[in-house]
Amino acid sequence: MKNIIWILRYIKRKGLSKNYYEDWKNYLNAWEKFWADFERYQQLADNNQGLNLSNLYPCIGDNTSETPIEPIYFHQDTWAFEHITKQKPSQHFDVGSNHKFVAFLSKIIPVTMVDIRPLALSLNTLNFKEGSILDLPFSDESIESLSSLCVVEHIGLGRYGDPLDPNGSEKAISELKRVLKPGGDLYISVPVDDCNKTFFNAHRAFSVDYLEKKFFPLETVEAKYIYGDYLVDNKRPGFGIGLFHFKKTSKVLEEENGHS
Image 1 (cartoon, rainbow, N blue to C red):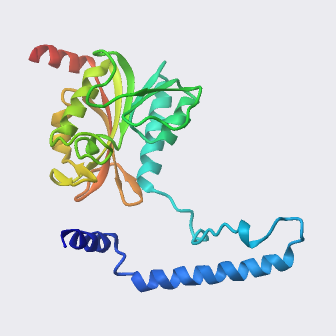
Image 2 (image 1 turned 135 degrees about the vertical axis):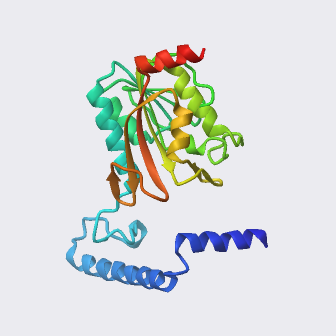
Image 3 (image 1 turned 90 degrees about the vertical axis):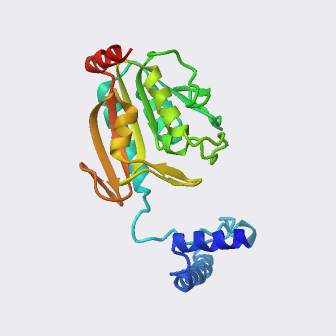
């Protein structure tokens, strides 16, 4: 019974119940168009194209009015790509970000990627290390340029096979700070909200004030935010995605020495 209740809540959250009949109507219309197109194509094609029922490969619903784009990855990956390539580090390190972002970046700058799940494919420009953001395989203050996009918020929720840990995000942040060398740059994206929230087991969201405290004493070079389809300069009320460029500056080093 508990599972049924949560399934219904999931459907409601996704908006499927609201547009249920409209979705089915569009789905059936798409199939009707597919078969009409197939019959018409049969009339147009010659016998050398291998057109028969056994080779059918229906792709339904791709004829949208706009090219579908996932705005978070579209904005965050281009944002990080631009900043990293402008900095021109001798080598860049990434922890758990989108594989496409890392792969493209590796064609311009040598990249080492760390993830708890091995990549199924390889590139000669991309060095992969299997490892955890909670125990990075690097020595203290050894990395000049580091990114981890849409990763920190997941740590400790078990979604990707990691151990359950309510403090997983905070521990991940500590590891990222540990390996960043003096003068190094850190690029982070993470959900932000008006207060800290846990959307188990999808992700967490954090207030900007809380993030600044946890990334202290790193200096914030830039902060951008994604709300819906738009990348904006300022934090707005409610849920969004924060993009942060942190740096371990000389000021940071002085503060660290003062606390030691």
